[in-house]
Length: 63
Image (cartoon, rainbow, N blue to C red; front, top):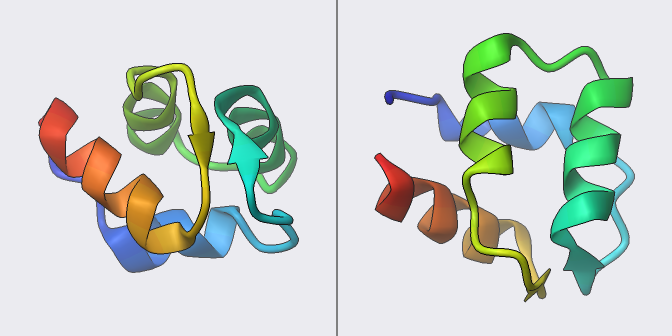
């Protein structure tokens, strides 16, 4: 699953870190993230993420 990290981070604007997976997924949905981005975020481990880089790393593992 190839997700552009820049596009994904644009969908996560306004997330306050640390953030739970649920908060991250909710924020992306509110910003109109496309299906590939939503699939990548929902496949991340259910934990708190302390930065955008941590999200990119988790999404990269799911690929």
